Length: 288
Ligand SMILES: Cc1cc2nc3c(=O)[nH]c(=O)nc-3n(C[C@H](O)[C@H](O)[C@H](O)COP(=O)(O)OP(=O)(O)OC[C@H]3O[C@@H](n4cnc5c(N)ncnc54)[C@H](O)[C@@H]3O)c2cc1C
Image (cartoon, rainbow, N blue to C red):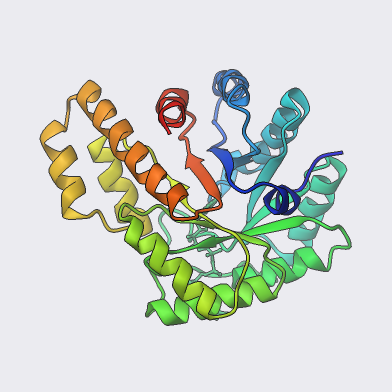
């Protein structure tokens, strides 16, 4: 019986989980299973596999989630978005997840596919994440459902209070836990938790952690998702730009400090955006 993430969160004080993205090639898949095997030795509470913005990697999410779950006997959460799917397609994918014993879903709206400026729901599709949660809840299968949270507010949301209201709607629709977007100042996370608690939401809010290993990648990432890079982070990593070894070392040090403070401040766990790389996350965990 595959354990659901909401049950794990009820039992454990602090969890650790690792996120992967689906590789595009057969060789990449084989490498990911090896990496997942090494991650399994770190005894994660669950893995998660992202869902591509469109096209080729989407079916692979299910295949990889299923295979990792079977090989390592560790629950895998399937990310799932509304992008490009009609309601009936979404339902069919849920049926397939249920057949493959995938018990936990990170429900997301998703973003407009590359090259398209504005987000548009698919014909007969869904506009917001809360509608996807309602659809999952009406499927008759008791999936455990997580949602995305944005400590600095979602990039397209007018203000943080409105963002909190929308998060509450996702939870009231059936979301059971929150995983946050990346952030680099823990103050943003703690203020977010306070803001969300004031709306009456009590579910666990897990901080999403990105180990910094490359300054240029960090700049690109943050531009896409809207996360602010504080001056102190630029000051550490800009002078090291191009020096892989020093950036790696500084990234580990920075993330260890950050994670310790989060756990001490009561975060219910750490969710690592691993980018399919073992070393930084493994070293960070060994030092916490
Ligand atoms: C942990 C994490 C994992 C992710 N994984 C993936 C992934 O695997 N694949 C992928 O494609 N993307 C992924 N994303 C990105 C995510 O799809 C985008 O950030 C997307 O823009 C927002 O998704 P959402 O589920 O929060 O959408 P929603 O909650 O629907 O919000 C989307 C927009 O609509 C607004 N809104 C929300 N509710 C309402 C409402 N009731 N009325 C009016 N406006 C509303 C919000 O303010 C926001 O601007 C991930 C994000 C995070 C934080």
